[in-house]
Every structure is written in C-alpha cells, then in structure tokens.
Amino acid sequence: MFNIQVSNEIILYAKKLLTKHNFGRRGVADGNYDEQLTGLIGQCTIQRIFGFPLMTGEGGFDDGKDFIYADKIIDVKTMGRTTNVRDYYVNNFIGLQKNYKTEVYIFCSLNKKTNILTVCGWVSKPQLFERAKLYKKGTKRFRSDGTYFRTKADLYEIKNTELNQVISPDDLKKQLKNDGKKVTN
Image (cartoon, rainbow, N blue to C red; front, side, top):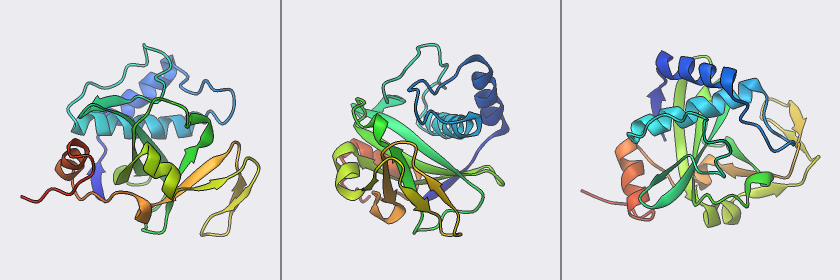
C-alpha cells in the first residue's frame, strides 16, 4: 500500500463535476453524493499520478473504463473511511458492475478526515472473482466496530491482503505493464 495526499484542487474539481453530472445511473445502488464524491476524488487522483487528463463526465456512462494503461481497461474503486487503512479491511465491489468491460481494478481508500488516499492494491477481473467473497443482495454486513448495513445489490468483498500489493506509483505502473509480475531493478 502507499499513500497520496489529495490536493484541494482535485477535491474542488470533483465537487464541481457533481454539480454538472450524476454519475449513478444504474437505478440500484447508485451511490449518494458523498459516495460519488469519494469515487471521483479517487479516480481523479489516480488519473493524475498516471499522467492522464482528469475526467470530464461529458462522455456519459464509461462502462467501467476510467482509463487505459498498458493496453488494460482500468477502473478505480474508492471507499471512504474515517481512519487509516488496516490490512484486514475489505474493499467492496457491486455485482451490478461485473459485466462491464473492465480488465483491472485499482482499489483505494480515502481517509475523509486527512484527505489521504491509500492505494490498497490491484487485481485483474478474474482475480477479483477468484479471491472475493460474494454476499447476496440483502445480506447483513457487519463492520469491525459492530455497526452493519444491508447490501443494496450483490456485493463482492475482497480483503486488502488478497490484492496484488504495491509500494509506490512506479511499482503499480510496472506491475500493470508486466501483467502483475514483480519487477526488480
């Protein structure tokens, strides 16, 4: 895992995007304003470290394609938190997105108190479904603090320890270029 301090510029940009666009268009489990803002902040921050222009929302539905890198369609998934990331935390993936064209998922957590984005790791689409645990719609999911929520749709959970581990932006880029093989210098 590695951390990135999110710039105020990215936060303001994401808020401005949400005044123009509603990015939840499935009709089920679309994400409220806060969830969409968290996702946009994560996506824009990762696009910036990869050197890509920030999303505009003008193209409409992206079919799970945030950007293409090393000939792979990549989707950035970001969860909001109020604490620093722990190894035992899970990342959520809504089953309604499983048929999108995405080939790689980069999972992130945004600490909303410190505006630090943690890149938890990445997986290919086949790895996600091999490693994640499926919870059917309506399942009660308990958090480590004892609170719970009911899943709005089928939900896949993948632990941070089940992700392909990365230690820096350069390490992430190298792994994606080399199909996940560790590269030593």
